[in-house]
Image (cartoon, rainbow, N blue to C red; front, side, top):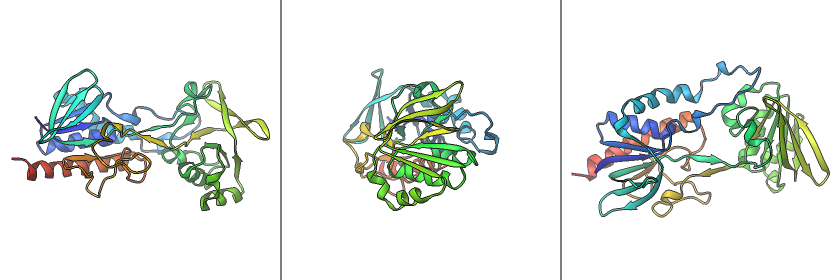
Length: 301
């Protein structure tokens, strides 16, 4: 039986694994890959990305340590988690079964997709899913935000402070009545297209135009980047039978990354902690590992 199994190999999971190993916990990390979202970056011409500290730089050292210690990782998906009389059992996609005293769930959250022509072709080449990560790069640029909920409104408001022009394509108008939505509608450099849907993403090497349609017809919008901000899908189904989730499906944790279930901890974008940022996930992964260490130290002989 392992002391700790960590599910998910993104920033939170990798950090948790390294911290757990340094505490001499017998640790196993189960993930389909190592790095998570940091394995993809936004590629754009004429953008000074060297001014940005990237997720790959931060997570790289943790990743290399886990890659080197190949006995602590299983590159496989986790399909099922079962509560034992003491501890938990994790079954992987390939049918392997591992038991553990404690669990850290760091399975992340996935971006909702537009599912329109051109999206897959231009993903991360002019089309991006995280304005909070890349907004500082777009000073005096033309930016499109797609979405109508708080995540999109926040992204549009942040970019409106630095971009030359922001177009908010909001499929539903209801959320625009929030204070931030009303503020955006009066901003001098923001155009709000309420009730419009994206129909196509157009470009050459990079996306540079989108086609949208609404009650007033179809139009094309030229841009330097489009951010798809349709809220996130927390990957929490694996533990939905074990721990409390909030109304959006995020795992509810306390300040020490504990769930309501003894021995089950969570970290990163799958939790109800604010901000989808690599640095936040790294810190949360470290906290979860330290809490799991305390649990094993105090609760197990």
